[in-house]
Image 1 (cartoon, one colour):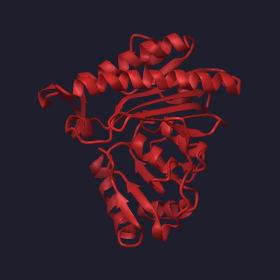
Image 2 (cartoon, rainbow, N blue to C red):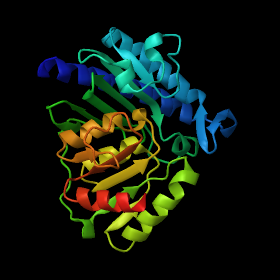
Image 3 (cartoon, rainbow, N blue to C red):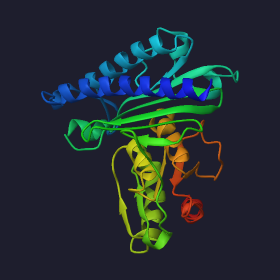
Image 4 (tube, rainbow, N blue to C red):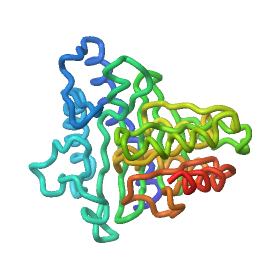
Length: 278
């Protein structure tokens, strides 16, 4: 796919993300906690997640009919391409396209009316991410990138920051798998609290990645998350000049459940801390 085609396709995906975001914003105005379901302990879903996903899948099928899907809520299970699998399972051939969709990243934030929360859509070709779009609904910011085309937010170019670790603003998220991750996050906080600029927790992996791309954060790390959480944002970070690996430091992270994304300057510092914490 040529650069111009990728760019035009990316802009079409931005429109899809904004339309889903408008639906989510409308539903939030009358949303009630009694409409929330539990997927797992402290892991929530609502009709809004499912409705958003159905909208997105329907629109993306029109844009690129030949593409398969990986979706968080599994609303495409009637389609053999839509079952939740790894990218390598869905797209074994380099020429195959797969959409990776998180219809509402930051559901816990959403149900509490606490920003940020977002729509996240990525397009993979074989084992490469070629498009990433993340729409933050409350701030009305659409972050997007296409392979080798740079990264943008609302048409403005994005660039990662330049802070070293002593001055870095880190995002260390708290995944739902608390029993497994609690020892790791405790060690990471002990390592960095008081030794970096500061630490934040946003509640949205997609937005944390976009904030790294925008230089608002210098680094982000999380484990036990899904491909739909990080796929779009990871490309946006890379196209903004940052670096993305898994916790082991591998540049091919697309089939795993861990992400380290940074401004590149602090990457080795964060990787070393993560390895020691595990």
